[in-house]
Length: 219
Image (cartoon, rainbow, N blue to C red; front, top):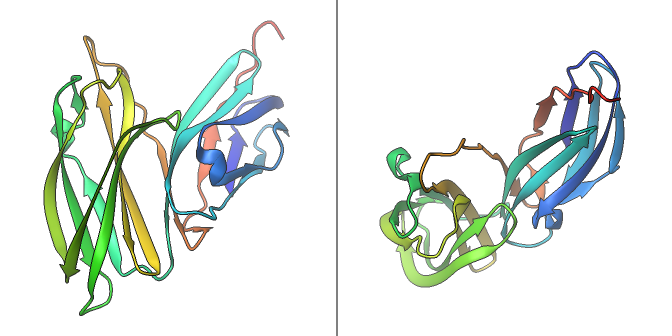
């Protein structure tokens, strides 16, 4: 579950909703919550019944204040054979539209001696759940594997995105993501998303959102 904590000095009434496609893996217990000063509330259950990479926002509205928390949810089976990873160099995480993203993909063998054909799906999504790129390739893997791959940003509007991989093989799958931004002109303030990994439909870590919710001066 995710937790919200009121660090303010007065009670807060807030409305909570989800943006993007993370509602495929998250459930809101109550969309209206009352939080006293210093009080913690568990307001989400995290679970996923299908393979995928889900992106979106937790949107919390209190008075005239709106807080948006970007969220990435990666799912994997509990019997995965490879620990998948995708990484983008720090200096390449902010690019202009049309530039290429060079990513490093890694498949780390969990069980020694694994030999299997794998399907790797590549996806670029924004935090509204929109998909901008989908590609796939199949290859044979024996032991660990690491390789580089370029991805085009042509046609991507200014904003924040994730590059994700889904590694699929008989009876199991694993996913991984890395964030990047397309910018024009002055650089915008970058938002760092909460990243959640679900193994066998269960959250690996319970995450805490600490919020200072300030009531509107008009209230």
